[in-house]
Amino acid sequence: MFSVAPPAALGISIPGRAAAAGHVEIVATDIRSFSSNKHKKTDDRPFGGGPGMVMMCQPLWDAVTATEAADPRAATRILFTPQGRTLSQSLVEELAAKPRLLLIAGHYEGIDERVIERLAPLEVSIGDYVLSGGELPAMVLIDAVVRLLPGVLGDLESNQQDSFSQVPETGQRLLDCPHYTKPREWEGLSIPDILLTGDHGKIAAWRLEQKLQRTRQRRPDLLA
Ligand code: 6GU
Image (cartoon, rainbow, N blue to C red; front, side, top):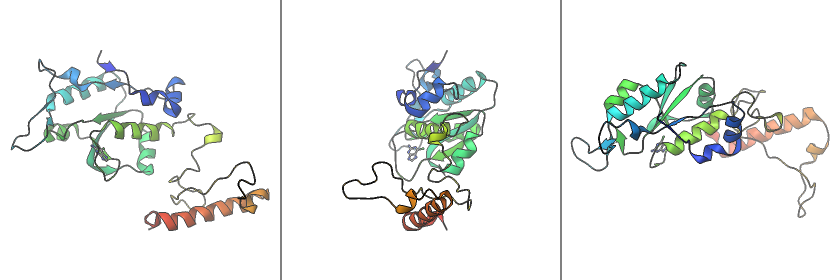
């Protein structure tokens, strides 16, 4: 078959545990193994000249269609590119609800536009900076999606209170509040008294206020 070992980074921490427990299956495909060229070439010089190499249509098309045919569930195709829609927690939530994702990581200056048109993938970027390929963005997306799958996080590490998750009180996406643990005094520094009152209503209100304050100070764009 054409699958290869997924990147080692996916075998550890929460994605690794999720895969071991059967909450997610991650399969990697080497596009090079679909090259019809005797040198396993998957890229070539750009028409019109210029620097860099361009990923050819045929190996990518064949890799995608063969990978899709190996599983009857329809796949949502995602192509990682700096020209894509910026990844956000709401997009991560949308993708976590899909039965199957097919992630395409190009490792070249670009991909022949004709195969992008034919594949019609969702094009996704992870931010306004340049990486040398889509592998790290693919791992970022996998980590963000897998931790939202049912059963992956236990109650103690619930994702309900993460930064960028909608707060139940207002439905806004806010930054997280500060957290404290033992000891009560550390190096002369104490913790906010409210956290010791045992008044869960007041504590929840304080935390919401902290989230709003932090978001106003650090990320006013989230409130706009
Ligand atoms: Cl998805 N790909 C590359 N090459 N660079 C990026 C990116 C993706 N997102 C941010 N920078």
